[in-house]
Length: 21
Image (cartoon, rainbow, N blue to C red; front, side, top):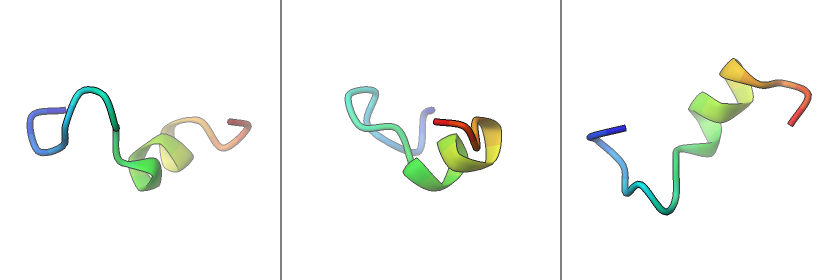
């Protein structure tokens, strides 16, 4: 994501994209 650092992706977006994660 351009808005967030590549090393630390937004956990909020990750949670939405991958709830199982």
